[in-house]
Length: 225
Image 1 (tube, helix red, strand yellow):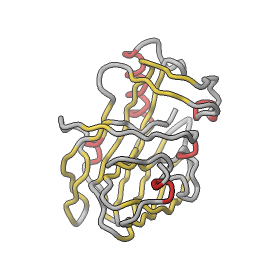
Image 2: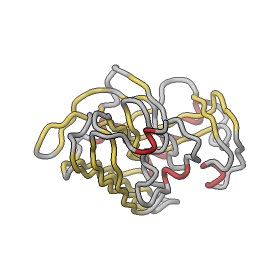
Image 3: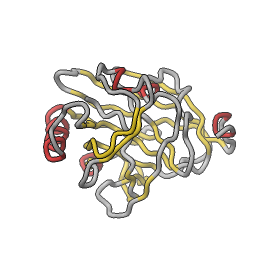
């Protein structure tokens, strides 16, 4: 199953875009920080957002998360506050005991690594038309050990046909994929383009074009958080 969770590890480093040097996360660096989205909204909305209206749901703190899509091609327009680093889930797989992907951590890691190796290709991240180079350096798996998560009713698992109800599932999953974090963008308009090819059984090129306006004001939803 395509990765439905943003990996919570983010690491500061440098990367090179065509035509210029821009800071971005290199997941192989040892420096780490964490952040999370807190929301009462079903997380499946983020992957199915067809306008950008859901970008600011539950966002807080110094890092904002930009969700990928579950399939197809999407375009999203949103405002984000100035001074926010941007964490991006480019392409990945989430495997879990609850979904029956394996019997233990070793099997889950083997499955997620196999899916990434065999199914995912042509990863692209472009910021204002500048493409991230050395994309292979941005692949990372979750650290040793299984991580847990909490699900609401009508969660993203049920959307994909799994019979997994609301609750907290401790020590259940691993993830493997491509992730990057950008430093805060300057005030004004920006584009961020994500693209990845998924082979069988998906046979899909998943793309999202974000049209972002970085402002000096909080969004309406932030003001009520």
